[in-house]
Image 1 (cartoon, rainbow, N blue to C red):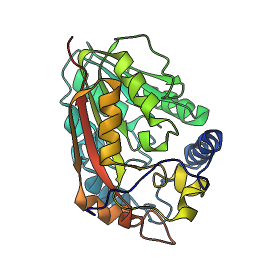
Image 2: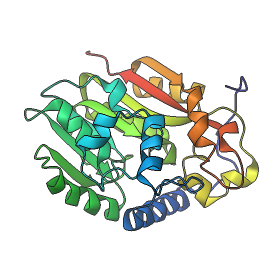
Image 3: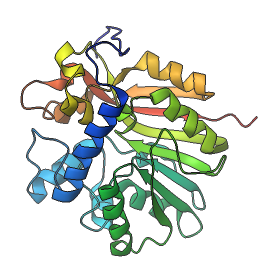
Length: 274
């Protein structure tokens, strides 16, 4: 990973927050409708291609097989359930839940005594995810329409928050972490997969709606994410880059190798008990 300390501070060439949200919503509405991957540059049309991508993201063959077709759209950059250490009876919240793949995997871990809530701001994705509930017989999973900066949940109701390559899409990541802290119970934990910035992006990337919506232009350096989590009140913050993610990130864009600028990482933190 690059040793540079790239900056993600807003500049004159960056999209306004409303433009960012619009670009993200339009992109994922299209993906939900077309059932295509968010990886524009890679071919995941065959079952073998999709399975290979799942292995690279960290999903096992068993995990892939236990969720009905239509929930896994190949949108993530990791497997947050692999680091969440979910327990039976826990309440799990998925930020930016998409068609529900990670939610259905989490539901299997928390069992009938637990529950999983997915929140997504794209109506088409929420509709698709709700259709998938019946396909997966997931009676302990529910999906809500909402923005991750303004979660439709009461204070202190969640044990674990997961997310898969979504926080980088937010124009106000500090608010996302404040909201995450608010809805977690004392002692609750954050376990997400996301991309982090490792080198300064070209100016034209910052201003490109497709780059913002495809998990590149919105990435932040590790130091900034650590600071935002700390500001929100989290402790035991641990961010671990995954250098092997360069293999699939390099295929995210036809015009440039974006693995020169971003890498997948696991991001963990805990809300103190007092």
